[in-house]
Length: 183
Ligand SMILES: CC(C)(COP(=O)(O)OP(=O)(O)OC[C@H]1O[C@@H](n2cnc3c(N)ncnc32)[C@H](O)[C@@H]1OP(=O)(O)O)[C@@H](O)C(=O)NCCC(=O)NCCS
Image (tube, rainbow, N blue to C red):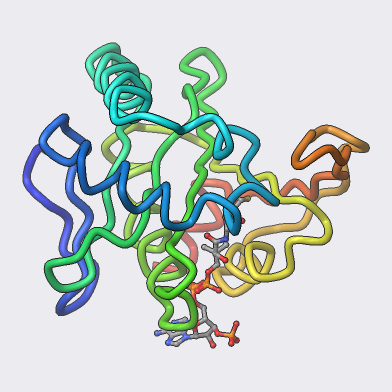
């Protein structure tokens, strides 16, 4: 699992480690304002140590069997992150979150990265349900689970607080049996 996941030629998911901290920090700082509309942690990344602390926590999460976090490489450049929120082992439920640099949008990088993690979620992690929660107004992000055939379940009212706004979140899910039927 520590080996990279080849998503498509020139696009790779690499397990997040501290060696990526400087590049990830620089990417976050460059994209801070753009990310802050949808990701409430973005304004608080101010020093390299903030990114290093985040990575350390994600490594502990992975080592506890609660899901990995990946840096997304497009060619040789780190362009974003995709990974699991703490997985619910008792109920076999996983949730994925993601972000891309602003200038890496529009190339299918995230849709293909998420698609690559679907078999990993159901086979390696042995989950039954994969969910994604997205603010109703975040149209680019909503397009990703919709493109991949996730089921739109409903809206959790004001379940997110980003950039001073309470956002309604649309909940999308994919079940193992639905994915298996499409194989
Ligand atoms: C959400 C986010 C990852 C979406 O990025 P994105 O580039 O639109 O998504 P993808 O990488 O899947 O690319 C899809 C786009 O590439 C195009 N594309 C090109 N090749 C493609 C391919 N092989 N497969 C799919 N789409 C492709 C699609 O047409 C689409 O473009 P369009 O929006 O102009 O129609 C990005 O906007 C982001 O990080 N936003 C800020 C943080 C955030 O909102 N995170 C999510 C919180 S829930």
